[in-house]
Image (cartoon, rainbow, N blue to C red; front, side, top):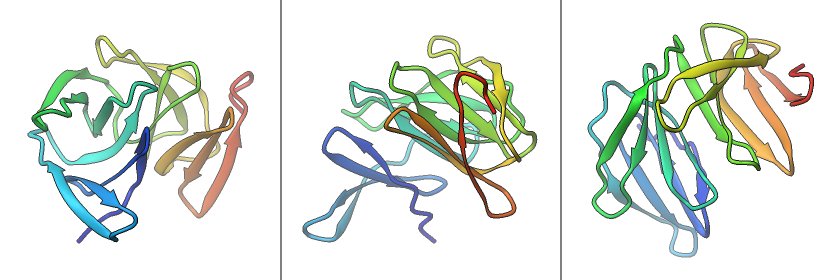
Length: 153
């Protein structure tokens, strides 16, 4: 089963399921498998930085994908139980959320380690998205919200 969670890297659209990353050709309506990285568990989300580097999240760790050979390099354990949502903001900060608590985390890109950045309305249903400077949050119980990054509310 394909769990289609999209992420843009420049002009490329990627989707992933729990084990694979695929490139979408929108015009041809095709998927091409580009990586099946070895991780410490299932892939719960992906995000790209402004340079187009793809980052992978598992319930326990953060990885960086090598776009040339499709291998993933472990950055480190993040320490967030149930981490399932990942997104960069416009300044290059990487955020994560969890299906286990109502906290928003900022991840260190050198170590993978998480620090609490603030609160979210409910536990994560698996997605964060920064759009035009605003953080959108998909929460459990059919919750969708916008998080104020100044107050984290």
